[in-house]
Image (cartoon, rainbow, N blue to C red; front, top):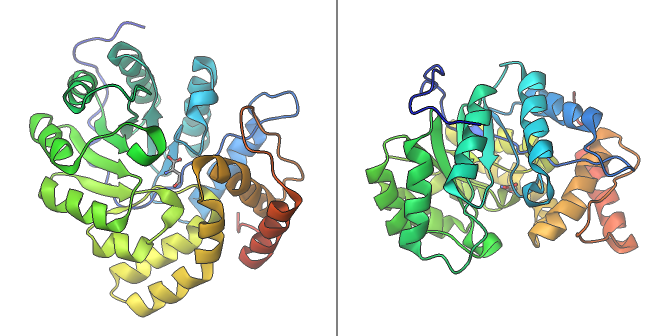
Length: 310
Ligand SMILES: N[C@@H](CC=O)C(=O)O
């Protein structure tokens, strides 16, 4: 795909980047193909449960295990299923700026409001080289840009001052998707001086404290995102006591699931499947195999959370 210098897509700057934007898991069939029906069902759940937006192709979507054709299918299905009801954010995966620019153009052509650049999986890359890499993709992008900063999960990332510098250099870099403690998010918020809407992930760990730190919202997997929408709303109307009460209810499930990304993919996906009424989960290798103990825990959490409303 050729990337035109200036792309004819509409200005999407009006999207308000705040609130809870659940990110889809990748569900597979017994034949190891993406499960179209389960992907559609997740989108319906995200809309019905009050997602302010929806995201695809992050760590929860197992982006690194998908082929280019599968990544494109996930974006196209999400756009088709959302049908403009809430905005779509697409995580961008690729080893070179050119590959990432092609994925950004594809996301934009499918109406994405936000493209979230994941660093290339090259832990040897210096911070300055990573800034240049992101900058090259940002300069050619027709959509609002974010980066996913998850050094603990990806082995590569930017420090708060480097994020701030990148945001000063590139006016279309307006959102940060972090995966880190609330204390770190507070630093990023302070250093970027209001230029970025800062989201955290990590399944929603520390949600009330993330909001106190100045985060605009959260990009969690859908495990218990409707409760996170209620927590977000309670914090925004100043009812911290209610937010903390709701947070205490979901915290055991979040802690259980969010032990690592492999754990999230194995058990978080099973929690969503149980809540959706999906009888079986087919894992794509390589990945963590569930144990009977883990599956029993997921059944307990699913019973406590109940089926999704949609
Ligand atoms: N933000 C994560 C999910 C967990 O919070 C992602 O990128 O998938």
